[in-house]
Amino acid sequence: MTEEDKITINDTEYDVESLDDHQKYLIQQVKNLRARIAEARFNLDQMIAAENSFTNTLVESVKEEEAA
Image 1 (cartoon, rainbow, N blue to C red):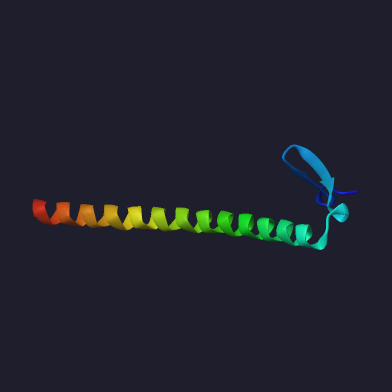
Image 2: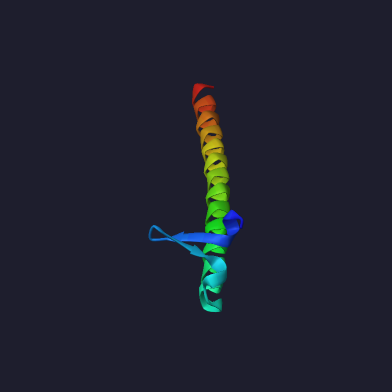
């Protein structure tokens, strides 16, 4: 049996094969949503870093104009 064959819910380990089809479906939904959330966080981190970079570039360009 692999780790994928078991799931822990509320500190109780279950064999996935012993669960009904609806429960297996819910497990797949949760796994998919967790992956999508992780990807969204990854993308958000990139967007925040890019936004910070553009903001800093704008701030520096205004400072340069004021100094000139």
